[in-house]
Amino acid sequence: MKIFTSILTALFFTGLLAAGSAVAENHTVDARGLKFMPMNIHIQPGDTVYWENMMTHNVNMLENLIPEGTEAFTSPMSENINHTFEKEGIYIYQCDPHIGAGMGGAVIVGDPVNLEQIKSQDVSGGLGRVVDEAIEFAEGL
Ligand SMILES: [Cu+2]
Image 1: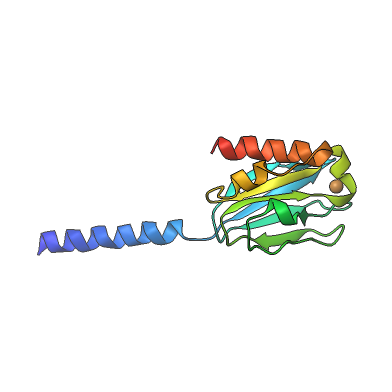
Image 2: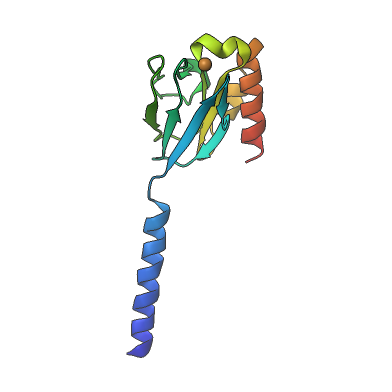
């Protein structure tokens, strides 16, 4: 009976751990000057990212720089926003008024499944720098 109880206890805690890892997390990205901090962030499917301090900024996820089948998303100017990510992959975004200065970032959800697709895009200037940083970050995961 004692062994049986131990097994039940072990199963119970294993279940708790499994449930714990499935709980969605919240992450914060802070707009500081003309930079998003952190610029690249790695999260899990179901997690939410909150962009704060967005007075003169926005988040515009670019159609060819997000996972296939995902809807492009643009936030209104000057609003702090939440976005929940369900699908794995790399999501690159820019701040529309400041992308020339390189103001953008990436959210990498689970595995960077669309890395090759993103590498194949011909981007330059401020957005090119954002994409290069995202690729380097994704390759380091
Ligand atoms: Cu901006």
